[in-house]
Image (tube, rainbow, N blue to C red; front, side):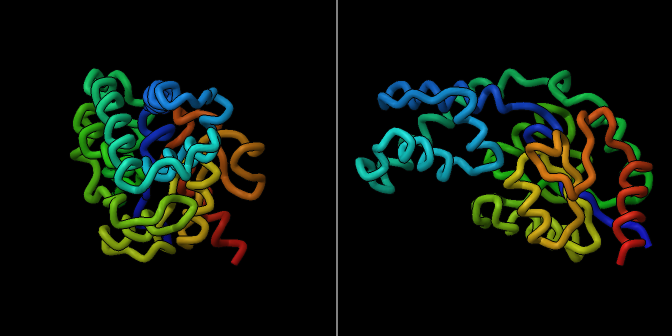
Length: 224
């Protein structure tokens, strides 16, 4: 038996808005007198907006200076800046090989869902021209931040599938852990150093295809 659904992360798997996130967070951090760099930004990948802000404030020793309402206002300011950037996105911003990959999956009858921490995910998919491929966009406001498995559980549920019937694709360590804890089968985009030695990996989205997923699935289930 083969897998029935694929649960996609957005950033780093379908498109790359990481630079936009970084620039928007850095601008906010600078205003708050907190200096963050690209190395620190690795801690924010796969993490939702509220938790990202908490990590920045904690890094700057200023977490206690802002209550929940003030943090919400700061996060809103960051998102306004980020939204200006993503408004310029086009289908040219889709990562290599992804459109062909989505076409293969749909032709094979696989169900597709988006499991992203981004509240902007629907708008981004629309800008990229990919909305029609996805039956479900899991709502991150209903889920705890990755590495909690919630968003992948919601995505599978939205497809009417058990997580064990799905493959999850991620580029962050937090996301991979979320997939594992959801009991879906993880596939990572990136390096073993960042994502782990014990999962299937590709170093580029261009190497994602239906045949590869079928092979990963068969290998994983032949070991059981």
